[in-house]
Length: 439
Image (cartoon, rainbow, N blue to C red; front, side, top):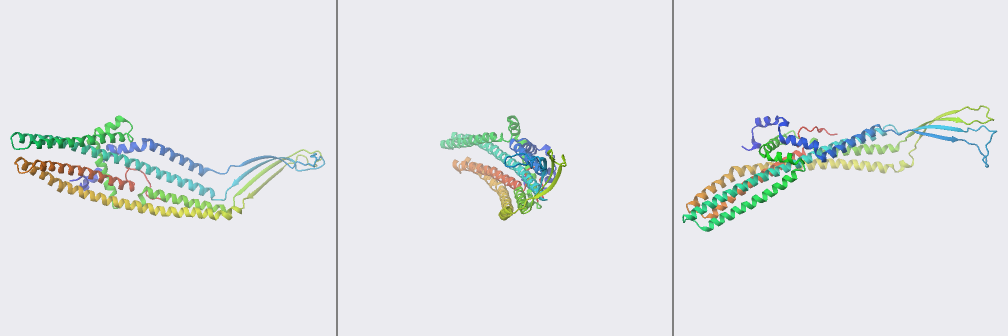
């Protein structure tokens, strides 16, 4: 029975396998924490978080001023000793006060941008994990098809021996031996081509596992490693085919667009504050200069007051700014719908493609492959008894090879569709704490 048709009991059993025992899970967790691309993204996210904290705590700085005021003069700048002007040094402290709520909205924008960064970080992790798993599927297929070509290369050696034996007893044709050798060389060429592709893909694998020794260790134990890959894919399969799956709540792309919409909404709200006044309070202390004729020498003064920005000229044009922010918000709402429709249609299309490939693999295995093997056996017997020519015998071998190679390619494509569904539904990484209910 095929892997994906195991009983529900087996599925539940494998679902509870300790993640630390699965090489694929361990590789994904290592990748998500150690890969330089994600380390760079981690630093960017940390920077956004710090910037958000700065925005939350930021308040206009006070201003401290010192001035020499009310110095009396005539045109010749002579000091008037017979007057008592308010001459002296003034120390002034000024504090700007934005209209209540403005700074809160600015902090909300910064927090929303952090949430966007968190979701974007999760998306980058899933993208990298998907590429890693896709490459593993391709390597697995190349390993299988290389082994298949090597197997058929050996089969052609045996077939050439059969043709040689038949010719030696006078029942065959020398051209049959040549055809068998030619066909063997054709399979040798396939083997060499696939081995080259396999070496190339293993080099590409070093992008995800830079340590050469570790990469070799993983791929050298391909039986256990790819058995763990199949277990991981089975877990993914149960998740993406869960009836309770909800793309609107689980898609990272949809969540990012929703969060961008929130940011635009806050920005539109902030723009409306430009219709409202901001304030400024001040306190001053003036130390009067000593003047001989002053009846109250040395008497100093204190003063305090408030100033208000009147949004006169800015308000005349501010409606354009508000309208622009509102347009951006409406655009983000359409983009949420677009992302949801896109991801939902891609998910459903991948599911249909996956199911179609499942059915095709079943037909290949249960019908076509069985018929091809029976055809090969009957053709071999017919050739040995002289009832069929050697070309039919070789054609039967080719048919069997292409069917087996076709199954390998169909399985790879099926598993890639599974990864696509997992990527869209944010199920590709195990136990990643992404918030399902987005704002």
